[in-house]
Image (tube, rainbow, N blue to C red; front, side, top):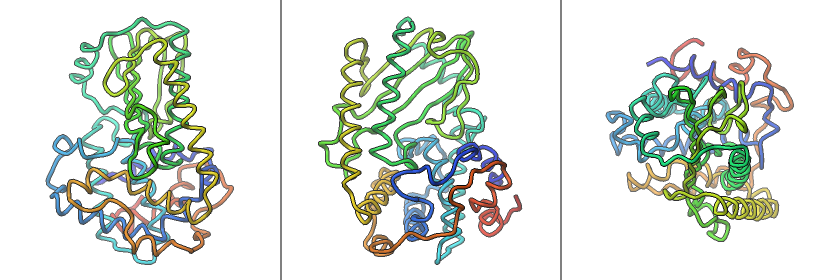
Length: 354
């Protein structure tokens, strides 16, 4: 199974015109290599215990994170590999090939999100559209949805940090529905128990926003929170919409109240993060990273939290340096492939040239 060239093309959009300095609250790419090999080793234990290499996406979808999150895990694995002191090539091969295969099966027409995030088939899209009691779109509703996405996204960035965002913020589509395009925003877990005290949680766990647009062209750049408008206006182009929280429709004043609640919770959690010292930030980020695969670990009856040996690797240790260039924007794909370790990973782990 050869996949890394396609992955490189799609994932380049995450860093094109960006720098690693932009990520908060710490330099993740010089933190993960301190302990990532131990986490990869544990993921392999889960894969083997659950016999996941012999199961397809449809069988285990309920245990997996979102497609965008799986792409993000792959994207972090490769630069982390460059900095690992203990490189278990076979473990890295098993984990990377597993998530790549899941993405190929989940989104066969665009597995790594070069242009879209096509989680649903044409038959599934037809079923989704047919079951929803759509509301007529208008400018006011579109602006309200824009505010809702903004505050939900802000809260997710606090709950999960800048590189685990995709665990609880994804977007699916765009799907062609006659003369409309369907876009589904999914905020799947706003109450990550074991990551934060529940006083920071909103009253809802999940939020989905369905939009049918006319005259609007969308593009999703590898991960759902990187959804951009190519042409048209999402404000004037919203034809129909539907919003649900915890599986129940909300509308009008209910949405306004939720916007206020999410904004308040986002502010509270950012204030809490600012109180943390360096050691506390490292621990927070490690827990956030491990939480992504909580369902898989619990299915295998293995504790998902960072182990004592993982914590010992980064506790009272400085971040690594020199793996990725600080302050440098990625301007072309070859620069990205080299800087982020994709070429080394392809050659040493996947035994491919890229």
